[in-house]
Length: 99
Image 1 (cartoon, one colour):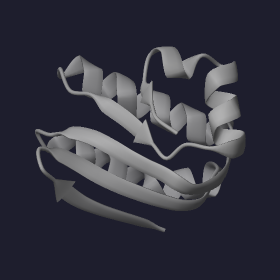
Image 2: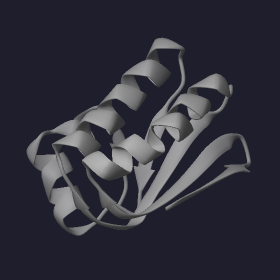
Image 3: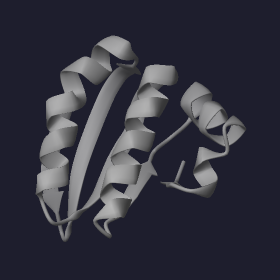
């Protein structure tokens, strides 16, 4: 479901499939581990075709936790329904989103 690696100074996480309630439960320990590192986080979403409110909530929660310790979250490869939803909710105005 996901691959995590350190790329340059950032932690890189690639997620595939749907980012829904089930995926969030599986990814929760991975997100918690990202907080423990000292690097900024990049999530590659080019393999995500669908995101629901649970996925949005997990991303926003991760963003807020990182921001509270002066780190950043970037989303790359965002397209289709996930991109439309992030823009509709104006999340792209707080979190760096690259398609």
